[in-house]
Image 1 (tube, helix red, strand yellow):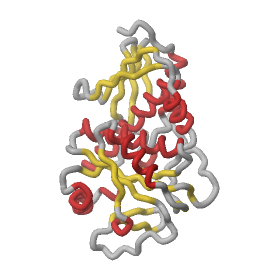
Image 2 (cartoon, helix red, strand yellow):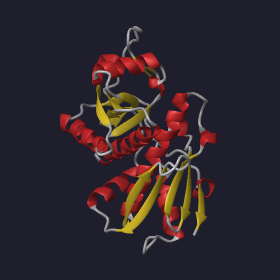
Image 3 (cartoon, one colour):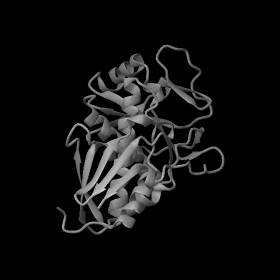
Image 4 (cartoon, rainbow, N blue to C red):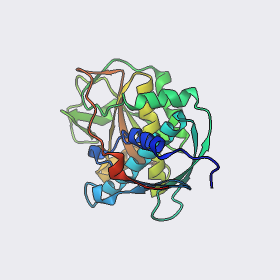
Length: 271
């Protein structure tokens, strides 16, 4: 049992901030249980968007993203997180807490949480190669690969983005975005959770650098496209889990925040 523990109001602030994590169609498919042992994360399967394996993947990716957002928010409040992933078949992760001074990196990321948006509009401007390398390193911390999808391999039609393998799509005129792909060595739910954590780390790091992002998974629904992408970029040795459009700035005014479920809706406190 930890010798110190945040009080309920402090944890409510942390989980309220963590709720800004990206999720497919803003479904926010997670639940929390907080007791004197720590914080436990569960999937809320009632909020998945369908019954396919892809919909299950979206739930676990979203839970990974909220787990990382939670760890960032805790670190900024002076709490170090020791994360145990899949301690049993029902719990996705448990977070044990220890007091620790907040570092500059956690403060930068926590400030980026409220600025990050999933922006589907066209992006403008060129990216520095060093930025991509930095984001690759952030993903690697979670055992997740990140690389750039060739421009010719994706297309957009309005707000919709699709992979482009032999379909004759018109490309993506007017969009200077780079397309990144997160991939894992295996397709287990444990690795999907880590991919979600990496997705959070990459998008928050980009926001801290003043960049805009849009996570995407719809374009990976077709098994053929996922396989072709894997073969081209990873010699078939990794499984694409999510795409992220990345750019210096978007066209138009800043987007407003989207609605979030309250802590009362997602969390049970047993302290």
